[in-house]
Image 1 (spheres, rainbow, N blue to C red):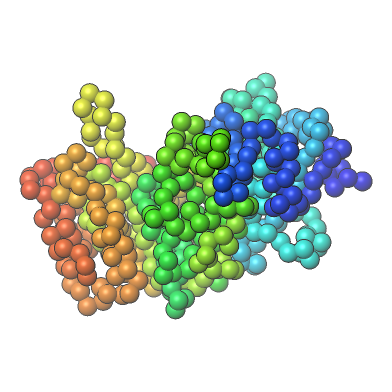
Image 2 (cartoon, one colour):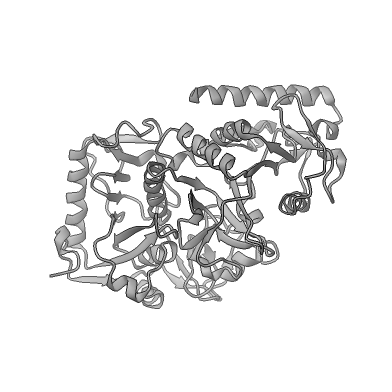
Length: 511
């Protein structure tokens, strides 16, 4: 009997739990578009889809879970019959394939909360991606792996069946919590697998009173842990990659009674405009065993042009976390001492650093704010506010308040301090002020980690009631209170009121 015959899959060649070297060799043999970079990373292309397809995610409407799920634009329902019909199609497609790949691995380093995951896919590069991103079992653990808790069927090389009720495009990602299965159609973007498992854990963990979080984590040599939350462009990856601290993980964690645990065994870093001087840890991790997705390279030298975004701005590197020299293995830590919310405020209103109480922490966690700079067409430079609850709305399954209450309970229980750091503009909004110096932001985070604010007075600003320190080592006092940095105080007041109204209007959705 074949390894997948119990699922009705009888493909003649099935590669099971291959090594990294074997998967690289198979990728180069079976995919003409793949190649090795000058540092021996495997360069691959994900086809038409170069990013996630959040509008195509569906969750099966099931009696045991339907009352818990925050149904809406993010979590759209599909009925069980449609899921079963889709699964039949996936298995039929697999049985027509020349070969398949199977990867078994764990999600969550904390063994009490660990789940066993099996990936079934048609591409060697997808198998290597999940080999890198899951926690890799030892040979002994593989021999006793047994029945997986969850199975992901990646049939992304074939399109979804539009005749099936509830499927609205050629792409479809379907999660069934009762069946413990995930289906993927119509996209070969590897990140879809990673985020499907994260969505799964975002449902499972609150059932155990664990907080699942879209954040990075690091720790000091004394074992003091910090969490970094922030949307794209806020500096989460850059600021958590600190050469003086150990990296627990770069993207997904849970907070349980034991402390912090990374969900993943690898990192999936954006590499657009990557420079060795600015992000040496990531740059040095791009070597044999790493996947480079959708990058452009010189075919003569195989040297990657990290500035080229002609395929996509979302170029990525996927590598095992041990490729980061200061990674902490196993990827677990104590209860966090500090939580840092990062926002890039292009309105120039929020202070560079402020302290949050429990209620404010919930408010800003549910808000998940950053601002994006608008295009310059017709001279328009007005920034636009972006809100993503829990700093990861696309992956959250319960209502945001469930995660926010868990956050408040845990931070109160463990006396965790919460900070809001603005990595955006000061002295005016985009087009008037300037972006906060990265060295200043690093100095503020260092001051947090070294507990340098213990004997410093704080004052409260009037619009968000944020507590701002009167001083911070290595930082000019003139930038700490944002209104002080604006030459036009009336303009600041108008901008502050505008931003507060945007926050309030967004927050009304959750009340």
